[in-house]
Length: 350
Ligand SMILES: [Zn+2]
Image (cartoon, rainbow, N blue to C red; front, side, top):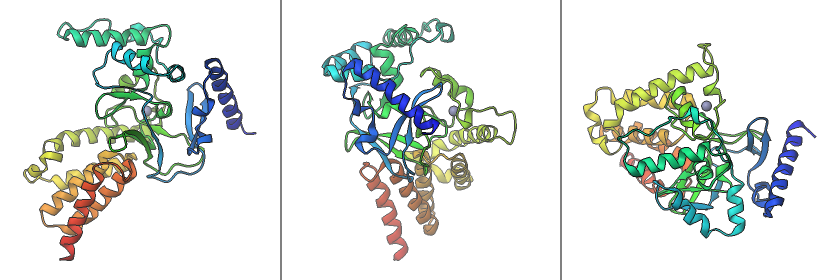
C-alpha cells in the first residue's frame, strides 16, 4: 500500500471515528461509493482534500449538489443561520458540524475595532463574524463563514462542495446553477488521476498580499504555485504576479467598455488588441474561468459589429466551448452564447 493510500485509509478512519460519535451515515463523506470521480484524503498539515480517482477531462461535471443549509439573503446574521439550522434533521445538524471551521484565530491578526462610519447592522455583522473567528470552538457562524458559497440570492453550505480546498490557480470551478437549483463543480482543466481538485475562493486577478488577506478569513495561508516564493524572476510565482498585475490593469481599462457597455468599445483605441492581450494572459495563467469565456464573447461580438465575421466566429465558438466546460449545458445563459454562434454562422453562410 502506498503512502497516499495509507493516508487515505487513516483519513477515512479518522472521519469514520468522528462520524461514529455523531451517528451519521458515513457514505455521505466517502463520495467514492456514490460514484463520484474523486475521493477524500488527508493531506499532511492541511486536513482533508478531494482527489481525482481517474483522469478527469476539462468540462466534466465533478459534482452537482443541493445545499445542506442556505440563507435567503447574502447579508446574513447569526439569527438567519440559526433559524435555518433549527429546521435541519439531527443527522443534518451533525453533518453541518462535521464541516471545517476556521475558529480559534488570533484576535491580534484582525482589526480590533469597527470604523465609526459603519452602520449599526454592518457593525453587528462584523462583530458576529469576528467573534466566530476568534471563538474557542466551532459555532454555527464560524462553520457557515468558512464554508458558504454565494448563490442567486443568499449563500449556502454543502456536505461535499464545501470540502474542496483552495488554490489561486484552480483546476476546477464552482457555480450555483439556478436552472437546477444546485451548486456545480466542473473541471476547468484536464485533471490527472491522483491530483487534488481545487477551487479558488478569491479573486484571481488580485496580487498575493490581497489574496493572503482574503484567505485569512478561511484560516489558512495558501501554498499554491502562485503563492510560492517569487524572488526568482523565472519562477512561476514571479511570472504569475506580473501577469496578474497586468490583468488587473487591463481589467480596469476595459471594464467601462465591456459587457453591457460593449457598444462603447469602438470609442476605445486598440480595444481588440487589449482584449486579446487579456485573453492571452488568462490562458498563460491557466485561468479558464467565466472571465475567459466572457472575454472571448466580447471579442466575438466586437468583431461581428466591425464586420470581421471569421474572427467573430472563432472567438464566439471558443466562448461557447469554455462556457459549456465551466457551467454545463443546463446553465441558463448557454443558450444565449449558442444563439450568437448560430447567428454568426448563418451570416457567414449567406
Ligand atoms: Zn495561492
